[in-house]
Length: 190
Length: 272
Image 1 (cartoon, chains in turn blue, orange):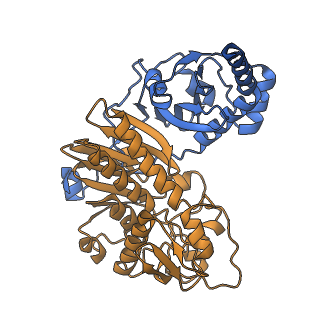
Image 2 (cartoon, rainbow over the protein chains, first blue to last red):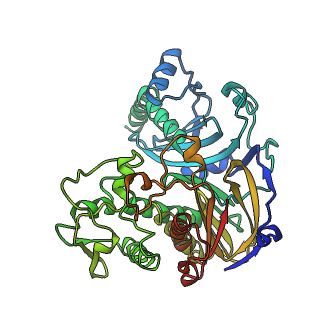
Image 3 (cartoon, helix red, strand yellow):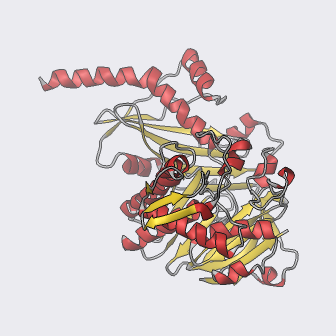
């Protein structure tokens, strides 16, 4: 192990701390996430219009307040699904992809983007608004040099809620569409 | 290539020099998932839960990785004169920080010292235990992920499981630690090469109005069980499993010169 302490750390002087304010990390693109979660499988974009009723049910089951966007849903050739969603907490915003097996179980989760913010006074809708329409290619990589925080990361409770919401989406909206597609496929096979 | 997955109750980030190491990273994540499945307290079917349920009744067969973590936990327990003890699971259950799977009644619960090896993969406990490996398994998972990456031919990179971080190969990683007074600020502590660092602190617990998850196993009265520490406690070591476990020794002893650190060739860093 080689540790080269910063001079201030060695002297034990009052150390200068830099504010993060916003820390953004981009991990993988949508295309990369697709390849990681559905290797060698064709994905067909399958956006879904989320009705108010479905939105309410998903909110009730997951306690997530911000509405689900149904525009980033893909169907895999084997009957599985890929859903990209965001969770917004008081201090973090996470864009993630969830892969769903043909039987409805979660096959895997991949984080696309993690943004940590400490605008305590900023109300949630505004905090969210600044990222609307942004893609992984957009320059929101503030303080990109901050890569390695040795302290605790925010917990992933919000993400757990987000995944729960996706399982509700599957039960109420994707499942049936999956079976109809399978039967079409089967009749073709005959 | 850099990827991130939710595992071990936190976000695990794997970064490698190579651009095309997707399979290597997949396998490293699988190793972490395996540690999670074997040693998770939340899962009533994990090996850990089975040990807590059965080890005082009969010999329990365990995976080589679980056995290794138990061995290291016993070693650190001994070297720290009991300051590091995995036998505090019930304290975290009582505080609502861990789920309750087993109800212990009228039993004097034992600690890690009650676990005995009958064979390298077979353990038995002399008393009922409620072990929680949360203070050591994360570091071990990081080490296992690094081992997989190296065996897959990855030359250099890092694995960071919610602040339990290890860097390998010729990467020099700048390390920042959250300021315990205001965790949105970072303190630059220098560069790390071929080593690990882990940090314990209570800033998020305090912000979220949770009870302290740093348990003092030697507490004499109930008010001292949940250690109220105010600083940030980091340990640097060659392997992450030691860095992770030793942060508890540092937080509870509040002494960066505790003999335990030199014994494990570790360096303690206290920010108060």
